[in-house]
Amino acid sequence: MTEYSLLDVFTDRAFAGNPLAVFPYAEGLASGTMQAIANELNLSETVFVGEAIGQHRYPIRIFTPTEELPFAGHPTIGTAHLLVALGLAERGCPLILEAGVGPIVVEFDNELARFTTAAPFSSLPSSLNRTAAAQLLGLRAHQVLSEPVLASCGLPYHLVELASFEALERARPSPGIWSEWVSPSGHEQVYLYVVGKGAGASPFVRARMFSTPGGVREDPATGSAAAALAGYLAQNRGVGRWRWQIEQGIEMGRPSRILAEAERTEDEFSIRIEGEAVIVGRGTLLLQESSEIP
Image (cartoon, rainbow, N blue to C red; front, side):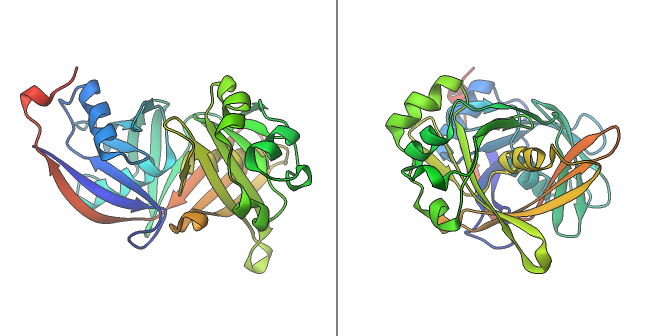
């Protein structure tokens, strides 16, 4: 038997945010079995936690239904919250999750878990241009504000800035144009965003994320994309600290809130992601030796 928990991440209530399955006692499971389980559960990501390799230090592996990822944001936040709930970590001590991109340090601030990205920010030109992005999304050219870029803090995203919330809501990616313009890049994640003004003139962002394979599908909360966006928005600024509240999943009926922060000093450029999570269920997979896949 293999136990797991189901969480909703980047939210403080059930049935919002991004669902996540976490197997906290996954030592001994083969890679093929992990991939098969992720495919069986069919969530955007499933996390497998290995045996502790030090105090408050755990290896993790992250799988979508079709592949393993080196890094993802909502699995990092959700796993941290679950390990605290199970008594395997403490809110007062940093937690280190050893992921494919390297060690990710997670700290806690009341109900928020916060991690600093392990991989440095990078950006390149996107395979999309403004015209192609508008065609991809079923929008007019003036509704795409600038040339898209490919940005990453461990997982690359095509960032596409739109002119209005209305344009964001209307966006409907075309699978045909996707295969022509996005797939050849080898990076099958597109993050749409609109920068607005929040209460007290603090910036906030509304966003949507689409990805493949298995058809073009939408994700309700994407921490790794939020990290890439924070890096991009801050990359041309000087020394300082900037913070954004990113709302995602609105159009899916699963509202999510991601807090993203970028900080520049004379020597460093760091990006942090914060969020809440709630445990909504627990289950058991009845695996036997014959179920193991190498």
